[in-house]
Image 1 (cartoon, rainbow, N blue to C red):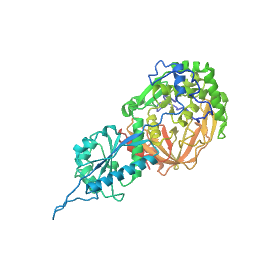
Image 2 (cartoon, rainbow, N blue to C red):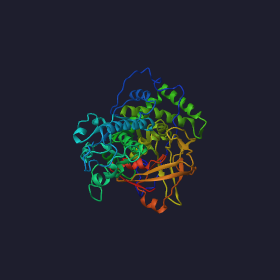
Image 3 (spheres, one colour):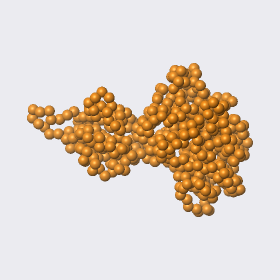
Image 4 (cartoon, rainbow, N blue to C red):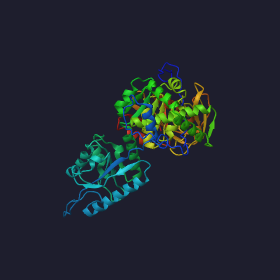
Length: 520
């Protein structure tokens, strides 16, 4: 057991570095590899999982499973009105007649189809329905199919809103100002519904962040957030050596309680037997060698360690894919990665975890379930990998972040240049020194030990140095007071992603709930 894996607040801290790049081994597909086995498989518990089962599952997992789509049900709440002489017979709004309603239903459906076509996340849109009251809402047969409702609040009673929220599904309220006929609830959704004729929020299940005016982009980023949340809640993750938590023994229990995660353990005795059989399988070792040659042929790759270390990482890559496939998971983490994995595999897991990340899997070292839920949520929101890293003390508007598990495809598409060197602390194996993009905006998520308060910090990469620390490293600058960052940063590990995703993360966290503090 290494000091890094279970270091407490008073323990000198070692750093596990892992990372790398997914190689495309031109012509060496997993389905061709081992295709003669013809063995069917299904997701199952990993206890007793054999090498034969793992290699067959690996042959079926060329890429990670895609994100599940967020299924959306749009509902137009409305009322129609008749003229009454010398009376106020109509409220505010441009939806007054059934003709208006028909045109609005078509407008809504068209807007959402356009949103679906341009979305960078998977979304399915059910047919829009118009309702005038709670009874008509309850009669809708497809609400149960939806993950989220978009309630177009043109008119009608607020009791319809309560009925929608009471389904327990996520609800986004949309009102029009200039994007079409003005809606009544553009005027009164705050004082009458959200605040219930008071000066503070009174409704349960929704708040001010759930109201959108006019903007399809504002609908889209909320749906992106909810899509990420759907794919995170209840997700499975393979835990090599079991789950753990940096200085937080109950972190796995918090991940189960807060995120409903299924943490499936593969112990090192079991992994050692699988690796032993893989090394005796000439087809498996040939595949590892072929993938290594294809990887090193990339002009963006510089090899500065032994080639056999890289081959060992690609052997592990296939094994890890097979384990995830058998578990019905797309995520994996390695405990005791500063010592035990090296003895069992004769390799570090650094390059392996990075190649998996670059193929759409979610792969993390250290089995730190203080931070891993943040990495999984960010990846499921962004469609990009997350970089688990060790932060340093903030100073002069900057800080250094480093680890050895950095993916090369941080934007989900383009490989960054990389030097393949040894893991720093052991000076052994294959780990990437990724050349991150200078000038790139990144989102840092700082999870706390209690899973109660996460902090967001927007930064810009200003350098990718090569200091005597974990191999993949960045200096990042921020526009926040140093003392504020130092005072408010909780936990230890940070999770980093290319781009600015703070609003999506904060929107998802309120559903858990975990407090979100955006230092920007």
